[in-house]
Image 1 (tube, one colour):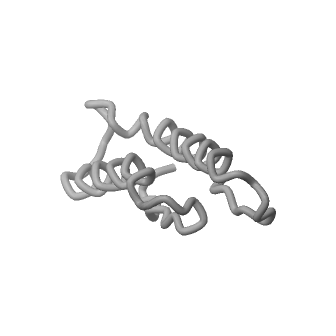
Image 2 (cartoon, helix red, strand yellow):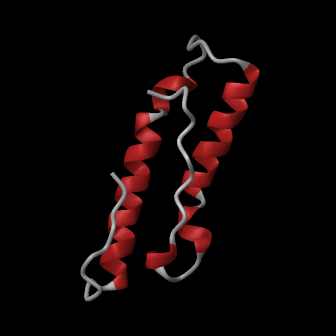
Length: 78
């Protein structure tokens, strides 16, 4: 679940910690699809790689944790 900050008084460092936690959860949730014997098409594998890279790039989106754009999870992921 992606953090949505209703309390603007949260310190940005705390917001970034929550964002990284959510990002790490999403990365871990897609780990199973990286197994060599998991059935993915070449296109799905490319989409999975791009999705995971987008998740890893979230901290590079800028200094304001309220402006994070989350990548869309590919439909083939559970």
